[in-house]
Length: 214
Image (cartoon, rainbow, N blue to C red):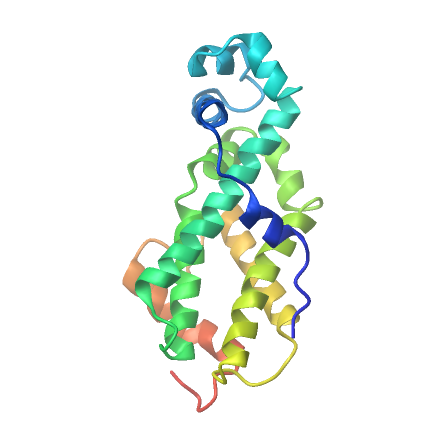
């Protein structure tokens, strides 16, 4: 069984936010989308959320702390969106193939629709790329642990054979991260039907589904 590390439970355990914190993070996110991170000042965030600068600094001692909080919230929301997509699209009695297809679709859709990631990659790549490449271990860990958790559950339910899920989970996480960094690809990312068919044809087999489901 996979050894689930600390980052995924930490992300899931954050929140709920109180009213002022939610206002600050909402304002910071909108400012980052409008101006980028480097050009966004704490003064601008305070103005947007209607708090005094002193109050903002009591909540976040530095701009770096604020950036980290926005990043953690974005990560939590991504995990919650993938969880919700899986719950809405399939039930636990569904076949392994169906659940794997929906997992892949949820990951691709979540990455494709993240406005902040795309904004920063387009305008401030020097700021964000290190945290998705040479300093990207936490991002890969989070993705690996999520997929490993998913595989381990299917194994407990007898829908997948016994094997160490972490190497496969890391491969899937690295592929998803690569697609986020370089969306120009022959893999169909815009068409929901094509995404699912691609997963059936090319992703399901990696999970070693019994009976050779297609």
